[in-house]
Image (cartoon, rainbow over all chains, first blue to last red):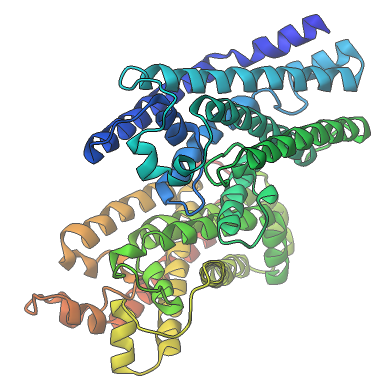
Length: 269
Length: 275
């Protein structure tokens, strides 16, 4: 099991994936630049939490196109990196499965490495953002003028900055887990690497449907890791985290069932 | 033969059509956020405004329609050639002409289906954003068409015919090129040249629209609509670039490539890989 985990994790550290991490870094740099320039235009003071909210806070309830494109870049990069973990039953995967001789063990190692990957991605994203923002802003326990202008509902609620940041990080990471396990399962059922493009398009359409209040939040995957569309109170944040965790567990269980039932012998034309 | 071709094509490309429809809905949503170009701030967007605006937007007729359509029908001939089905089909078919006509028919039906799908995705999007049917119009095409003929459905039918005819001519071009060179790559090269030409015609030199195939599709640049808008009344574009001109241009393009493909296909050596 230990060796299997090691191989699965090592598989992710390909050259291609490291390139995507560089792209993420560049993206963060761009976002921070936008954040600082809006701060300067408004002539408002800002703290690190403002930067965190505007960069990894997610989607607004009444969103703009730029907002959703930014968010889709973050999620899309994660999905591309994760995709290399689950590239169907071919090549090295077949050899590993033959060596282990147990589908559940094999799949479980994949899931654990997926969790590990999600943690690394989220931590890199959050730490990178905080590091670059901290060059320009200071951390404080009081909300600033920037918060009052852009995140008025959070300014009016009595949540402290550090509490909000911890909540933000937990929603981000649990949301990423829920999203990637869901996509893993769908990939397993479809057995087609092209279905990722379709899934991204469908999730974009679903998020627009949610914004126009046709479907509940639970059905639009892009909103799982997002915080800004929720009302600013702690209980709602906690219910979002609870949903994400339960959804992840359900997905893992479902994946186990599918793996045991599914036949991996595929005859293609 | 014709029925067999249609059946085998639509069974083979189900997933492609699904992906195309999803892309269309995504583009429609993106276009909805781009309507600020003509809509004054704080006013409601109407369904007809949105539909005519979407058909005349450069991203649709320069990028989405040609490239997605080529993605759909680009390999109808080369697929048969590559997997050696062509020789097997030719044994059963009476004439080579029949095979060629069946392929052209696929293009015709697909272009109509494509236009219908795009219209449907626009209606879906307008339903999602709860747009209304009646109110104050702001887009030029709807305003002028109400002034001239007092009917919007009439204008929509003209736009639909233009769009479908444009796609049919383009598809025939792709088919003829792929028969001519026995490869679908050259079709894409041709598309890239057309794209450059169309971009130049729309954004830089409006007089080049007479020759560009991509500029024939949108209604916005045609005579009754564009002449009202352009301040420069002396330009020849405002007088002679009419809908009937575009239709005859597209029909001529369709005929030329139909003949080229037909003659080439009748004299072609199917079994050899060379030219």
